[in-house]
Length: 352
Image (cartoon, rainbow, N blue to C red; front, side):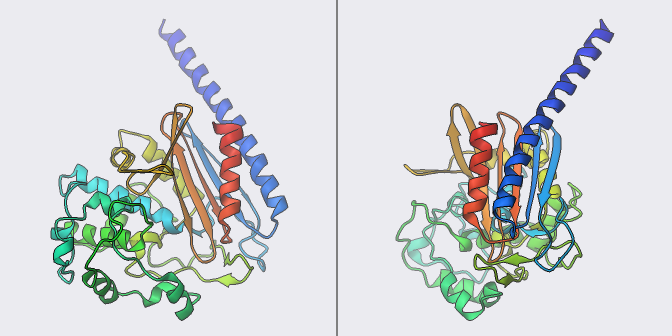
């Protein structure tokens, strides 16, 4: 009897592996076709299903390079950083350091002095689901000041000035994408742990998962892609600064699939925290939002996703807890349409 059970278990494992392998061959075909139609765009993709990991990549590190992109080539994951930040917030919830419905007032650094109209109004979950109503950075002006490093102009002083000068939350409770919201969440984490955001994310995500090619401040590595604007101009990777929790982590398909494996495992700390972020905290006729993740439910399957765009690169991460799969798509060009088209094609024809 024991031998029969072991045989059946081995057979099931083999079937799962073959199924995942066949699925990824079809995904690879879509990625290859996309690259053939957009030969100047480097693409790296990772996929995980039932713990089976697969990778594919097309293109070179740069237009001048002869080195092929692979699963460990470094990209800007941009705003995908936000789901790492929200996972850290959820880990703090698990540690009973904070609650998602706590007001932010007592957790902000001392430099912030909220106007009377804002006190005991904004919750942690409001920041994380983009409905705080706080004013945001003027990206157009920042890009005019420094097209290569627009975030360089943003400092702790400029952030506190924006928040302290706010007297009304004109669209509180309505969705409006916010960089300041996630920057504040990073500063709240620093208050909770008495450490820098860099130290916190390293201790709670990067080190435990052994993400050896995920970087914060120092990302000067050989296998780094060069980013390009939609017009084809070179774009520098963003330097690390106070807005890091909103979008400044650098990583690759290999490490992001490792992260997704932890997310999909509800027994890990990261997986337990991810389940907290997957609860619906905002809903209207256009979208459902968790903490940092967009939520989409079709035909009984719920998927969680987050996209990212820097000045020169685009990315998207997506997973289904029900069907136990996850995918990361990284491009070395700012091209949100191509990124979304690839994911839509993969999901509608293969994963749905």
